[in-house]
Length: 277
Image 1 (cartoon, helix red, strand yellow):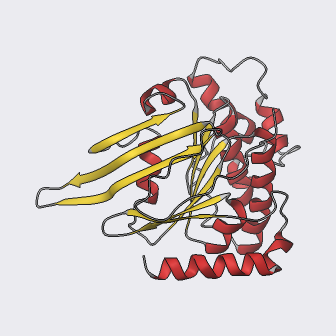
Image 2 (cartoon, rainbow, N blue to C red; image 1 turned 120 degrees about the vertical axis):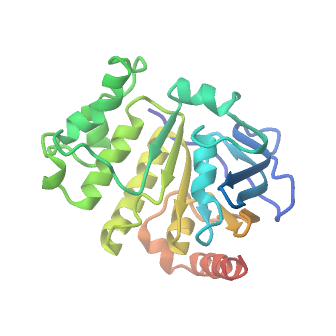
């Protein structure tokens, strides 16, 4: 395990190239991504002309109105949706290669734990599907449960855990195969505010310790600002980049930072942009 040492890259406005400086390694590179879905009567453009570079170890939050393509973009990165046009590479290869190497972990809004398996058994499941193989030297399922704050709850079943605990298990399960990229699709959206705040702090701690490239979808302006090094603002109809906003806040953050002038000004700017999306 290692700490992230990324200095957050600076970004331009919409319709820029969104390339990283040459001294920053790129984890995900997208060029002119379009995604169209077809029905019997019509086609819908979910994403149009998305170009973006994401640095290795970066924490990128995605913010925008419903229907702007946030979740679709995560699925393109995970090779669950094929782009209709454009190119994408993940860790220097097509998304399919990254998925087959188990370089991508995915956490959904619903923890989707198997109710008949304990927390530990749910975390172990991806290893069992992969014939018990894990990368040499990587954390064990027990160690990952401890990392996400669930030491002592290894034998608890999902019905014996709160919603926040179940999401912690889901995060540990996504990490068990030692991914290099972590995709999170509104994982805390259904939780109460206090639990959500606590998990935001925990997630940042885990990210700093592991140094994962993380893409996090949210509808919360405050969550996007607190978690991210940059905020990708997407507009709807069709989904497209509106603006990429650098987050000029200290990397060591607690919830108290939300009371600072810098945080208030940042969230006010995000709200103004969101109102035009």
